Each structure stands twice: as structure tokens, then as C-alpha cells.
Image (tube, rainbow, N blue to C red):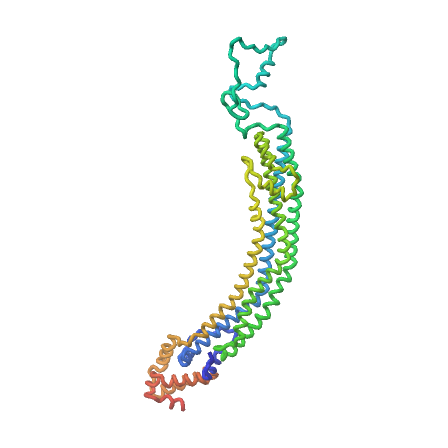
Length: 492
């Protein structure tokens, strides 16, 4: 909205306040209340607008002075989160290494136990004597005696017919041995354990290599982030300090020329928008300058850490199956172990996929490699989250400008209003000054008030004329002067 010519001088009065000194509240004394009433609230509106601009200037100055610290906070955030991601990857690498070493030690322990000479005591169902037991009993004879010959069947006696087995490996007395409990052939069991142990040993370099790569990438990424930190912090100074200083100068000029305050140049509005948007962009750029090269390096660790976790889990599955064979000594557990280890030679990825997909033996947990992908991605989520935090920091910087500016525009669009307390305060003070006065005394009091008004509003002739007219027409003053004598008093 364009200001009327008679308003220009009125608002110029407000500009007399020094920039460094906060404006007093509108209508805080008699003459400021007189000015508010006489101007129809315009002096209060201008004062509010200038206070809003002053607050914005303070925010601009504060942002400019703390720009280095704001950028340093984003740099430290980026470094912290990248270092955290690097440490997370190291921890996962340590977990894979520990799991593989534990599997290798278990496999070696199982093989050692299987190769140790043992007294084999066959399992015999109750009440059933095996052929070996009968031979052993016949062998225990007194010295010099001969084994008794088997009694021939008596003539006419019925010949005993051997009973049919009720199950594979069935014993007498109706007791059957389940298929999954059939004993393993000792040599086949040793061969299966040997093959499984060799498979785990063959995995070691394929676990160690990706683990070493992960640790190397993590250390290299940390060094790159530390190296980029200094130049990243300077980005904010280069990108934002100049625009902030220009904006501060524009706002100061607006305060020093309040006749423009109801229609500030579009360039100020554009400058506010530019700086608020640039704050978001710049803080993101600061973050990316620290992260970009370091994150690219860290990203190279994603495949190796997943490989290490997969292969360590495969080794553990094989070792658990070996332990199952060593404890159960059954053909079923031995077959399950042989099923884990393919006869044909496979590359490490195909081997890992084969073992992971093999049906688990009873007591051996299934292997889900998908969870390792989730575990491998978790460290990299930290770097993505820190970028959002940096963007938020820029948004908050912009809000310190955008918020007060929006408040200024709201005040600017609102029509001026007289403070409801202004008129009663003016009337009360006039009544006090003219109390008990009439004739010459009342005329002297009015002249004194006019002199005060001329001193107070000397820089604003338009407002002074309005104040004089208000005093001339004040009913209390007229009453004490005995009628419409205001102009005559002023002319004396």
C-alpha cells in the first residue's frame, strides 16, 4: 500500500530513535498517547513495524556472527555419523570373524574327538542278546574245556522259523529301531567329518579377505572425512555471509527511511526468500562436502561385510551339523552333513548359496542370509539420517528470518488502530492539568501544552497540526477556557 503524503512526516518521527536503542511501547507517556490518538493509531503501527524490522536485523546479525559455529556443528555431525557408521562396520566385521573362528574351533574339536580311540559298546534292546554277546558268552569257558556243540534237533521236533523283522534293524521282543536312529558307519562318519572340516578351512581366506577390506574402507573413509572438514566449514561463510550482510543493510535502510515501511521494495522480500532457501541448501552442501568422498569409500564395504557375515554363518551351520554327527553318530545325521558339502567343487558364492539353502538337519537352525543384508545396510542408514539433520539445521536458520518477516508483513497489512487505553489516558492527564484552573490560568496551561507539543513533534509538522487541532477541540480545555477560545490562545 502507498503512503499518503501527510503520513510521511508522521512516520519520520519514529525514525529518530537510535537503531541500537529499543523503541518504547506505544502510548507509554502522555505525549506518545496524544500522538497515537491524533494520528489514528498510525504512530503505533509504524512503531510496531520498526520494532519487527529491528528484531529481524538482530536475527540477521546473530546468524552472520554464528555462521561459523553453525557450519562447524554440521561438519561435526557429519564426521560423527560417518565415524559411527565406520565403527558399526568394524563391529560387524569383528562379529563375522568371531563367528567363523568359533565355527572352525568347533569343527577341529569334533574331528579330534572322532579320531580319538574309543571302546564301542553297541546299543542292545532290553532282553535281546546279540550274536556277538552269544559268542562272547561261549568264549568264556574253563581252561581245557571245549565249546559245546550245538544241540541237534530231536526227531520229529518242529524246526524253529526265524521271525520277520518289524523294522529296519529290528530286534526281538517286538522292539524296533527307527530309521533316523540307525548307527552311522564309523568310516563313513569320519570321512564326512573330514570333508566338512576341509570345507570350513577352505572358507577362511574367503572370510578373512572381505573382513580386511571392510576395516580398510572404514579407516580410509574416516581419514577422508577429517581431511574434508576444514574446506567444508568454509562453504557456509562463502555462500551465506555476503547475502546476510546485504540483507542486514537493506533492513537497516528500511528502518532509517520509515516512509518506505508500508511498501518496502520487492528486493527485500526476494532477499529474505533467497537467504532462507540458501541456508537449507548450504547446510546440506556442508554436510555433503564432508561425506561425499568418505561415503563413496564406505559404500564399497557393503558387499564385503555381507559376504563375510554370510560365509561365517555358513561355516557355523556346517560346524553345528558336524557336532550333531559327533553326538548322535547316526546315519541320518551323517547323511545330512554330507548333503551340506557338495561333491563337486563350487566357487565360494555358489558354495555359500548351496549350504544356506540345504535342508537343515534336526537340531540345526535354518539359515536366512537375508538378515545379513539388513545388518549390512544399518550403518549406512546413519549417513542418510545425518543429511536430513543437516537440512533441518538449515531450515531452522531460515526460520529465524522467515518467521519475523512474515510477522512484519502481517503487521504491515493490518489497518492502524488506536490503543484503547490512549484516549482515557489523554483525557485523564488533561483533566489533571486543568483542574481548578479557569481564565488566565487555563490559558497559560494551554500555551504550555502547545509549547511542549511543538518541541515534541517538531520533526513532524503534519502530526503537530493534528495535535494542535485535537487540543483546540478538547472539551475539557474548552470548558475551562469558557468556550471556543482555543485558536485565540494559540495566536497569542
